[in-house]
Length: 382
Ligand code: SAH
Ligand code: SF4
Image 1 (cartoon, rainbow, N blue to C red):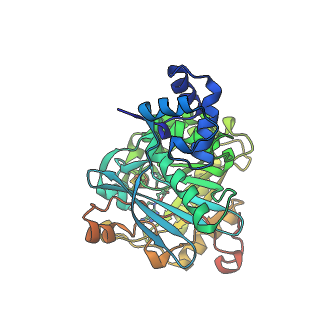
Image 2: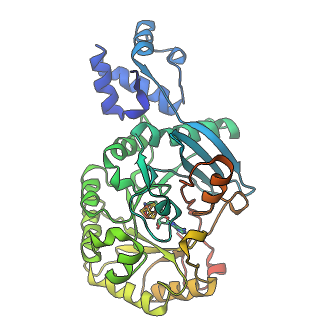
Image 3: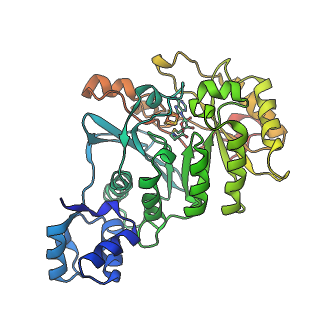
């Protein structure tokens, strides 16, 4: 069995090279060829000795993912569907903006958390992705975008783990992937430009803080345990008080950062003024009085099985205003890629119809925010 070199962060690759009887610094050269230049063949690696290239050919490979579909939106959003075998597919979405290029990637095929408003959750869990499968989404997207756009410099400046799956329930594979994203010899992304989004796996939040304190987004969706138990079943295991404490503790490893609370706006469920006030009370209860979090309100992307409706634009604005009036930054996520069904949770039916894949698809997250002029006064852009 040939080792897939996409499975290794730089340290792992150094260990691999040592086992081959090679010096550790060879790993750096190899790592740069793979991640910075997008090489998939050892023969292309001209500054590696022929003997090493031959050794690599018999022991290793650079195995990306098979792309089964690509959709390009008129707004520049590009979505790829990757086949991960056994009828499972995962999705990555590229969202270009004036000042950044964000890639949203998946960590699992399916998800075991089972949130009520999430199409991935409704599909159930298939399996964890390997480190190689997680990083292959970035490797593929970065290098195919460079070719597509005719660029030699970096195209992707931000990565968000907001695709399919719960990243903190696949921690062992996630960590080397994050390290590869951050490594100067890899993608060289800054810690604050890589975001892990979690539904609240409390013990793993602490581990992430210790190991690799990237930006943290927490999918809150409710201000009380009773409501959150119902929307995010993991809350029964890790209730709000524990979750918020874990968030506060996380900031010790990421000073001057803030936690982003994601809040999917569901009509009549969690979107009333009383919920917004309860949210303010909840976060004020924790922390030391300094601003430590911001809110990202997400319009719900409906799908039939959810039997839920999204809040109206006016309701979202009113909700956001309560948060901003209380002194918090609240942003409203704008949907992108509508013309290619790239919006959150919208691809599932599409894929099922055309490919038989059981709708195991991520939700596209858009990072661009509604301008203050559209969203109404009091809403800030970040
Ligand atoms: N499992 C992780 C990351 C993937 S989901 C998590 O839950 O955080 C990324 C974000 O999309 C989460 O905030 C999630 O709550 C949100 N989301 C899921 N389904 C959605 C839908 N149908 N409409 C809008 N947002 C959704
Ligand atoms: Fe899993 Fe996140 Fe979807 Fe919940 S919202 S089911 S944690 S992918």
